[in-house]
Image (cartoon, rainbow, N blue to C red):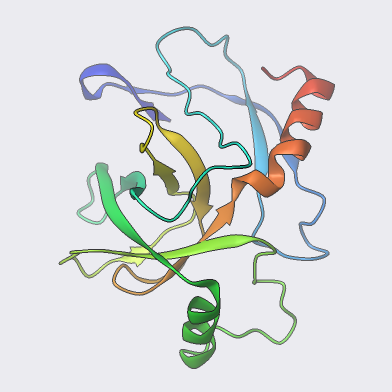
Amino acid sequence: MFILKDGEPWSCAVKDRHLHPEYEYITYNTIALIELDYEFNDDLIPICTPNINYNTKNQLYALGYVDDNRLLEKAIYNIEYVNRDLCDDFYNRVGFKYEDNLYKPTTYYCGFAKNNKNNCVWENGMVLASNTTGVWVLIGFSIKGPGCASPIRFLDILSYLQWIETSTDEVNIF
């Protein structure tokens, strides 16, 4: 489901899905491509993917929809970058260290919501994006984690771009 102009909900069927090869063998926290049964037009504006030189440490935002109040609401959090070693140390201290490591993502960024007064839990699939250049650029996707004032892991989309390009070329999704 998507929220288009004027808050109007829009949905369509899923044609197919494509799981990243690391799923179930290396980590459960990875990406999947979903092919929608729809011909895209100008109503949906795509978010840009980063290039290799993109700075992912400032002007970061987590964007998504939450239903904390039993109502679908847009959520935007200003994210402060957290060094990966500090992030891993936090997850180990609070007991998010897993024996089989299947829940630890292979490549990720970490951050926390600055100036957040809500007591929330991070959900899967929120977008980590930046608009330092005036255009929204996709950095990653969130993984379910502790409260918003705590560090959250975001899958690094740059690590998956080659697979996305290869997969979408093969099945002609875009």
